[in-house]
Length: 312
Ligand SMILES: [Zn+2]
Image (cartoon, rainbow, N blue to C red; front, top):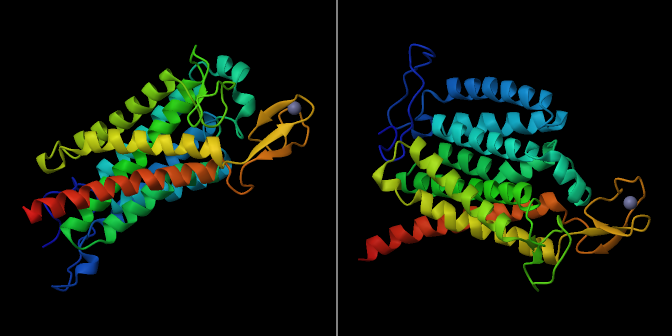
């Protein structure tokens, strides 16, 4: 048995990359003869996309390296649908980052720790959990495990999408953000501040990711819950992000501008002072934890559904 029909991937045409080798029967660890070709193709794609993104100022140099690791692993271990869903996340996020960039720079850019150019840490923070799940999916033997990894991947990536869309669009809100914890009104761009527009953007991003991934899985009936799971887990994951941002994320204060910021050195050049939060828990660490929560929630739902259907 090679691959389960439920989580099967459209293969690269064998005429294009014919690396079929005979495998000893029962050697299940190397059950995917196309993996080598796909890893190579994934590397080719991610280098190309990374360079385009670098030229379009969406990625920094270290960000290209992050995109290569993430893209190659996801495409190589998951397949076309996984790779394309990652591209959907990246392209939609880049579009929203550049969308009305000047307005955003005036209101909130100052508060964010980095510009719109993503570096290695940011790529790893948003795509690290999804990449690890793609790797687990590729190495897993049982159909059940693969399905759990696939659902977890959708949960992690929908959290990243929800959070990015919410951050990029939420700052354009006409409503003043309120802290997710206390409801106190805060300046636009403050970590943990939420607006109706940002929350709607988060929900749309999570649902869009789940739907796109399900469509790419050729709308398999056994995966029909993916859009809903992605919506719920992605939105919940982005709430975790806001909650951590409002409570434990490291925030600094610029004595020169008398402003709160995520930056250690403010945009004005002044070294900032610690204001609150845990020093190592920067925005990247918060994003990583949030995507981990989104992924774990989705995996729990998928595993729970199976146990429940077995118990019946
Ligand atoms: Zn300053």
